[in-house]
Image (cartoon, one colour):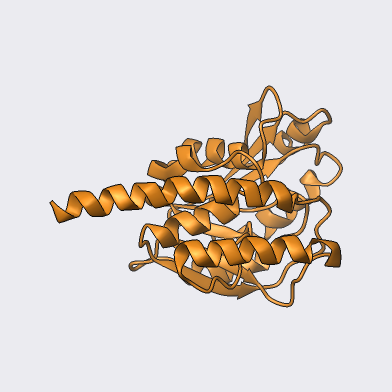
Length: 230
């Protein structure tokens, strides 16, 4: 499998070493060859230093904090493999879930998204998440089972043309889901289990991003259909 794993990280110096060690141990045990790319998104702690100390890990550094989505864009662009898996640096993602993702790659699939089983998130965030889900479902005319899971695998050649349309914040995941579905690309959801998230997701900003970028994607689709009709 021609694979890269891109891990955006911001001020995760306290745990990034353990996350990477666990990931590398799992990959080695399973005989999975993968390029591991950590994008240190302008951290003010030792995130980059701790990541670089792990053998086989490539670290790319942003000189300032640009955002989760911006870090993913940097990592995906830097990768040279057919497939790119995005993986969180805060310990939320268990490496054992990679097997479920990898088993679904190939064929006509363009994006595989890890559907978080049993995950609802903090109760305070549920109204915002439901609102975003309604918008995403409306834009794509699809019932999306998990629109913003960060554990996913992109066929790199399919995502590169759209990277400039995606936001730099946490809503990268939601917007890329909408983009692939809206553009008629093949998206597959596979069940995974996750651990407790240690960072916050700002759903209001995510709603604004999906509203703004969803409109841009919709306009792109309309132009594409008009060209096909000529």
